Image 1 (cartoon, rainbow, N blue to C red):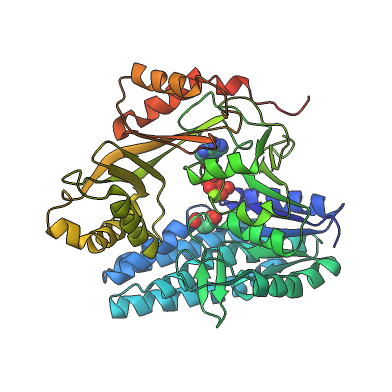
Image 2: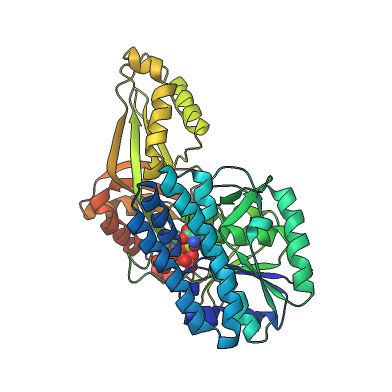
Length: 475
Ligand code: ADP
Ligand code: ASP
Ligand code: MG
């Protein structure tokens, strides 16, 4: 199919009847000129609400659980009534009640068992996306635009890593083409659920928090789309998180590698796994603002000319630094590192930054807080002999840290950038704890004290004058 456009609307872009109307208008306008597949997130706050409901159930808080179930129902029923003309409401309400009923059964099951098994959590929390796809499809239909809600449980085939599943591309491609292309060819807009899939044997899974971006890129890959547009609540990918740096500016273009580094190092505007499926086929991505659709947004592509210098700075605060320190220089540092990394790989822990130094070959690495416990357990098991015999000092964990990452293809071979960055951070009296830079010079990762993180981000943004160098495209 020629010129297929996949568009994804995030939680705030689906956050109210008015926002759903705006998203539907954008979709219907695009459909006038080209085939379109839409992916939607749950309404903002809904995934958190679903997770909280199940947490209440697990601890036996029936009242709390029921209050959350009522809030879920009220939010969607109210939105439905504000969105749809009276004649179109009943069918949508019935479809939504069926989805809410499914979630209620899961919540009551957890209440009875006093447990929250990951596979049931995944089945439950995907309901948020299902509800918003029903709303959007019903609204488009009521406006005379043929549309159809599609649950990606039937489309995206994943492994069984509940809570952070990965797609299995061949069967996904087959299913996506079989389920979505006929609808598009028949002139309908499929409104697919973001965030979810199912294992080969049909058990529901989710792709991880923020995973609707990833759904959209999986579908763009599977359907050989010519573009992916990700609609969110800011004007595009910015030189820094605008909540931390008020004068952050929108970048007009970034390379796949720059965008992937930013996402991986905490820029929430894009889920870290989004770009991987698109790079081989070179499917360009646009990050755009559904609140201001006339603005151009940011184009992410395989660009030939890299913009000079550091382009953007990003940060993460829910991280911890783990340090491993040999007790004497007699211990083979390389062997300890190899065993440590093997232990981490065995638990799928993501090492965000790694740094080693000194004669005694100590090393440290950064992990997400939510992965800390598993990581340390795996490390202690993997290095148990060295720890018991005192060849290694006890493993140290510092949770009072944050990660700052400076990103730009154009930093390669440009002297003075690292110096300027470190200088700017120290002028704020923020202590630098660890530094990592790959040989590609695409990213400088810096670990600092948590309470200095925000100041450091602002200082680096100003020092590198990022907001002044956002345009690569000729005007
Ligand atoms: P959605 O619900 O549309 O998926 P998210 O909340 O996941 O939206 O991501 C958008 C948010 O990402 C923005 O509101 C912004 O605060 C934050 N953000 C963090 N870093 C950046 C950045 N470098 N550029 C743009 N937005 C960023
Ligand atoms: N609704 C899911 C979440 O909040 C997925 C997404 O919004 O991308 O994590
Ligand atoms: Mg998001």
